[in-house]
Length: 181
Image: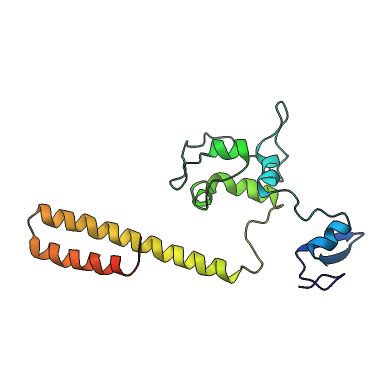
């Protein structure tokens, strides 16, 4: 999309609804700065923090729905980076992409409030993002398959089933040769 002022690539998209009339502006970073808009804006962590961490003595931002009775959150941490939900509450930042899956139940209501009830992405996704997600999913399945084969190989050797162990070893080598894990 092109900038409304200079025809460069637009990176700032502003939508204003005033008196029931919706107006959209698409600007490049330079033109947005000239008009006093802050293209850098707040980080995702800063935006979410206001829904997670309130100043001492003040309640959290009001929810659009009545809050469910509080139940203790399990003290889990992310397998990928070690971030705990307490760390997220303190900093407003997750450590890695796996954190979203690990803390899904705790993040769901927060993101719903932050996005005024929207819980699903309805727009386009970058093509590279979809390719990367598919590749990560296949890598994960491959890792699980390799772990399973290693376990079965070890059991076959311990049970002195060497013929089965040779077949498992060859299959394991074949999968490992297809790419690094």
